[in-house]
Length: 156
Image (cartoon, rainbow, N blue to C red; front, side, top):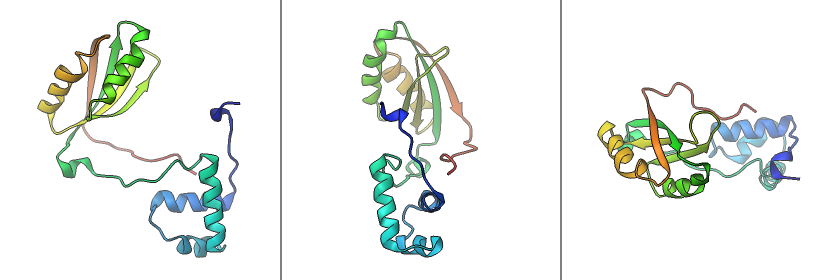
């Protein structure tokens, strides 16, 4: 059985624990334990179980790219001349620091990427000098995000 075919069952306490940590991953375990009504040790045990199951895949700090001067977010549909070009193209896209997401897709594009740039000129340079010259890329279609309206995880 593939990992994607394995589902984890979670109860109400697990859901409350996950909601609290998704809201603030630095929230103290004892604070969550008091809120949920079980011991800190039980919370730790549940967290280890959820991590072992693969449901929790890590924790991270989220950096606001605008504070570092990255104000242009764009989505780029990448057309490849042949499907066999996908792995080679993705390998080269991984080398471009501005590429922050890459997806194989159905529809018109072979690959759909999300990039962060400092401004439109930076975006144009990344497109012209880094993405379009990749072997197998026949053309690209770019969408600049004017403002992100929703940013959330799956509701638990």
